[in-house]
Image (tube, rainbow, N blue to C red):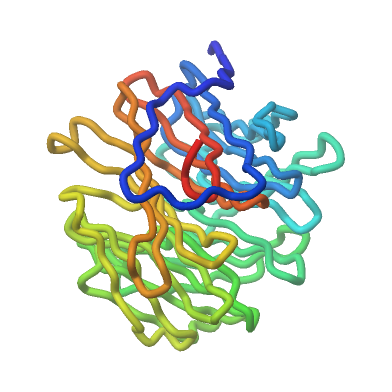
Length: 361
């Protein structure tokens, strides 16, 4: 594999809505391209040093790349304890360590969690056989007490797995309407409960569920007019926001803490689009990552848009290149900017953008 880091702008940036006033102290922006990475899945998270960490899989090998605030690679960790590892989600703990989840195996897969120390080269990987032939972790986060939550598909169901501080199994709990449902994202709530979002079945039904720290399913909301929910967050005003899509339309769902529906907002400005991630900005506004399909799926553009809490689109930015681009993951940086992660087809080159608070380079 040949890896080439290019700290140059390799894409043409297109501004689609408005030109907001710029930040008084400009946020550093950059672009990284990793050629021939054979990368189609993975995740990005912001780190306390102002940089980010990326987990990616290539030919069954999961690699974690760590970058500083200027986009320089400072470290690499290879996860290779098990056969065919797929890293699907990554997060940073309060101590600065990294946690990764995904699946291991080929015909029969198990969920796994990897711990990467911030202070030395320690890497610990743990595999969890939850009794099913097809299991996968799709989201991971650390609780305030140091325990770990993993959401995903377990026993073919929308599930939440809890591990203690030593990564030992504590419990698994389920939600959703049927088999073949998947939990795709999770967030800690101010009261210590966990909110999880995803899809309730393969036919398309959005699902939001809230679990307490003992695994009890406290509340559940099934949304028939939502195909899936790819991301979830909680605002400082104690509202839950989730992003997803239905019939190729981007949706922003707002709920109160009891999962009562407050509002459903949609963007129909683009006829065919797919939401992949959403985070909250420093001023608590939902910022959504999505793909726009052009010419009936034969060409994709990566789009970034910010929404107001009243459901209006504040700005939209598109990253256009000569390739077929797939948006994978979004993270909010400590300085107010964003990290945008994805890959290009057919080259399968990885791209990582650092943009400012308005989505600009």
